[in-house]
View (cartoon, rainbow, N blue to C red):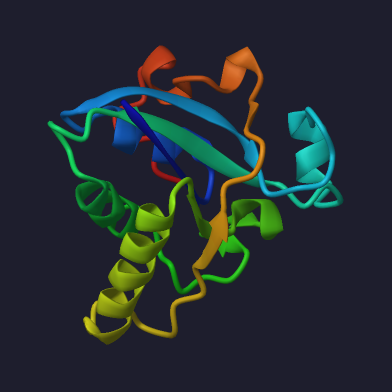
Length: 156
């Protein structure tokens, strides 16, 4: 099993999209990229901790490739919106790929280059590509939120 971590707005929707992918073993909503240890949702929402809402994806690379996960990432949000996704505004909702290995970094940068010339987006892509930092699991009530509340798409 390998890990991949993505921020693409509210983690409820992002977790649901990745959780549905064949070859994904598990997902966790959480926080990454900030300065405070073990932040709470309320602290992250103040935008003073520097964290992004992220989904940590544990996947079987024999069943789903990192490139396929990147395709899901690009398809599940608008990577041209700086520090927001739809009505969710703030740096905690930023578009970011956190890489865990040099190979993931190379694949993420290559996929970004493809997206930039694809013509699929209405403006410049603002997605950050950063090294993975400590992952802080979000509170239990955020885990698999859409599935637990019977929301079919959980798109915001």
